[in-house]
Length: 374
Image (cartoon, rainbow, N blue to C red; front, side, top):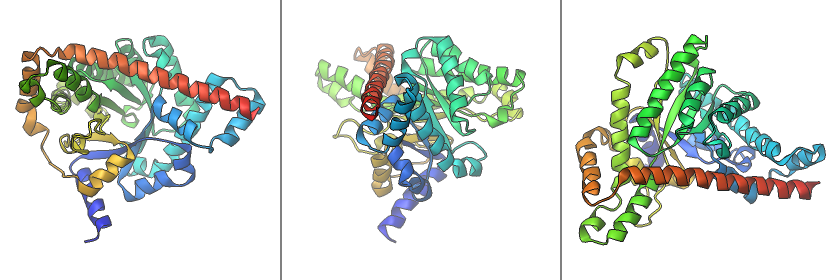
């Protein structure tokens, strides 16, 4: 068997185990060169996520935006609106590239995500208005609008879904917040149905962040400096995500959900985000191998996809078999004095701040390039 065939087989095995492989990246270059379509055809990629950091990097690293920037400059379009037009153009084209995956999966996969302006993460009304505007601008059925799972984001999630708009809930770190997200999702679908929308055509994922949890917890364990603390490094993120899947199973095995499913609703799938390892001492595919479960999405940077294709091991049932062990990990951390609620609150705050900083970086780049084009 050739190396290429082995790689394809590993990804096929991962997909067969219930994991939808999505790409955590987007750029004009991927679209104009056919790179995204090749990943769809050759590497089992069936969806794409984007965020302000990804767009800021794409714009800074490429000349492929020059023509559009020139046209925007000639028209005198403002910086904020130019940024929206640039990002929605990429997302619209990506939606078209992924349309075969959307059609083949009856609307479950083939989805492309675009995030609301992160400066609105704590403003419910503005988030809903922005979500509606982005939905209208992209105008593709396989779009997801990304809304952060902040406290003000929860009612925005419900209200956006109630408008018939599909949502990717992002920046989820804690188990209690995840339960609130699932409740907001079901409430949104119930309201969407009452408003006359076809809920069978709607979709949602809940983006549960992984590697950043280990980064924060490991930092706190290192400060403790004991041998017991060092032995717990690199375990928190996987345990937290595995327990999130347990809560997912519970939430979608209720009479409330069964009523929605009877009306044609699709479950809100857990999406494992931030799955590239930040610590070079850790196995580079650990957040893929340890999080294999039916009906999940794993969104990866392209190097992680290739790494799994090269040497990843599919472990069917690993998540469900690990609930007891995962709870023990969190209990052990608590015994060491690690306040996990503070960990997740810190990560949510830092996540919003980082995306805001990237959005300002994107706007600055757009402003500079508009000036040069003019």
